[in-house]
Image 1 (cartoon, helix red, strand yellow):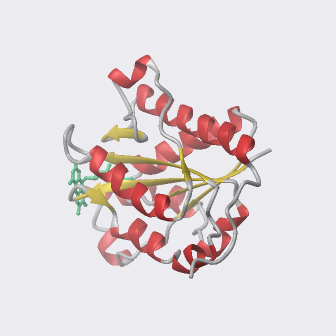
Image 2 (tube, rainbow, N blue to C red):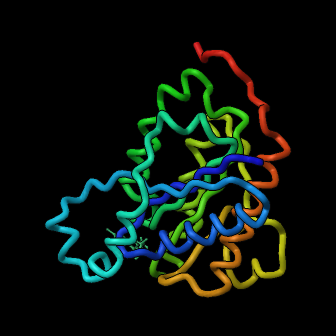
Length: 200
Ligand SMILES: Cc1cc2nc3c(=O)[nH]c(=O)nc-3n(C[C@H](O)[C@H](O)[C@H](O)COP(=O)(O)O)c2cc1C
């Protein structure tokens, strides 16, 4: 059974909802899934001014904060971020920037990875966000998995990962499930594959 981590950043819950759908997909494929969030850097007194945050904060806080040191324990990792000015959030970027020591040891090489995002505008930087999240994952030597080539791609999701515009609708959730399913299935097949050794 492949061990999969779904790690997300979210403030008003859209990305958290997609993370839950990705996790459902992992379970459907028989994977063992853990869902965690990245550390928040915005002070609580600022977040509290956002009604969207106040509405979901209890549920959000029910997810443990992921530590980069635990990443090598998983066979696959799915990363989710809201779009911030056409890019991933600084909170997710900070999390990824903390993985330098794992890069040196090639600890994530050969593991399977996928990405998902949410934003507000139809053309507000969806694919730019997804692709920017992939750069560090390729650098780690991870095996990148996008969405399968299904008909629903005409309406939801992207080649590069799962998406939503605002609150995820049923189609967005279904594409996120497909992503989780695919990551779990491929992680099960390539489990144990790695190119070990330190990068000098
Ligand atoms: C500082 C900031 C920058 C944002 N930049 C964009 C953007 O470039 N394009 C866009 O469509 N939405 C943008 N958004 C909207 C969020 O991406 C969107 O509300 C997202 O779904 C929030 O995710 P969450 O509910 O998981 O926190 C921005 C929001 C904030 C606060």
